[in-house]
Image (cartoon, rainbow, N blue to C red):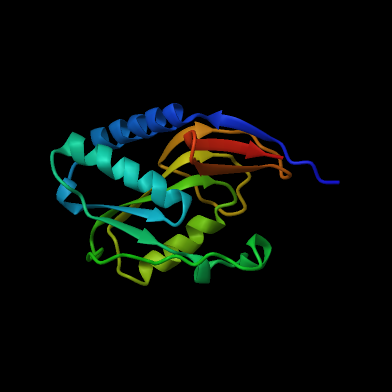
Length: 178
């Protein structure tokens, strides 16, 4: 019998506060807002990117371009993720050549998702720089990838997963499942 348990790491309020903190930190580092583009990795990263984008726009007093990447066909571990992956749309309607990309994901683990996202991103252009922002960094890297901005560092063993959930009753929850 496989019993699954969940522990809430961040409540809806804490998720939003963490994204506010990330937006503030990023805002303080932005020197050329006209070159910045927010790109969220589907699915969890897209939720974080949308919220981050809204907060950054308020802080900057202008609207940054936002796009979304589906990396399903770029993964090297797709067979271990799911037998029927959910494919989402990639929406990068803006020119990303020589732009400063803020690549956003919910949880950073092995680095394989980010490697796939970088491959997908470079199929659309050649950015000047890519900053990685994640809501949570759980360690366990298999590739030499690290975030420029991380909201929460979480220790988790290989039998656990950490997910951002869009819960109907509670809003966004960052949960640990074992």
